[in-house]
Image (spheres, rainbow, N blue to C red):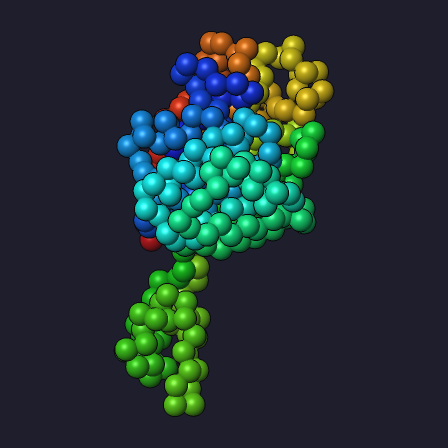
Length: 303
């Protein structure tokens, strides 16, 4: 099971009922945070979730509405007696930007490990999260992220017995380990069936609708995508500032064949966003408005 929560859905400036951009994913006791806008800490507390299990923070880019909540979050994590290393993933310049912000959070009881993205696409693995970063088209270097929980094939007892694999190795093989003993090598593919469908979430903000987004989101269970503007007459503004409209986001969701789309990162000027949803659903019927605290539990499909 993967929990997903939108902690903040605003863009540019926080509003009374809309914090700045952040989302959290929880799996198997570990949490992954995407962006950390102003208000992230309050949103986590309001949700009833905790800071200490955050093991990975992914940054789309370094505009203030996506990272300004970081120093306070780091201090809170330190005060929660976290000692395990924290991994941060983001575009080139990550270590420089974070260390500058840490001027007001200089002493932490845990190590920060930086993973700077230098290629158009990159992949990372941590705590069961498979993270795929892909470069999008904003007015600064910016990345979207697909997070997958992959699922190995079912353990096949018959095959294990046929190959005379000692039972004491079964659980280790099931976890993906390769075992060599007494001149024999046992590999997971000897006892596992075909890989089963996992869980996939794609998160993308601050970009024009480029095709790499649809490719990265293909078949996703949940597609969280920016909808800075809903008014059709603001398309020119979206192009100027390299953002997206509701309708462009819906077009990406349709091309990607995702199961469900949540719109996020709304302009402060956008009011009554729900009035625009019927037209959005003409393009992609399973489109929903994101709101602070909106969450879902995504489950593995039954075999």
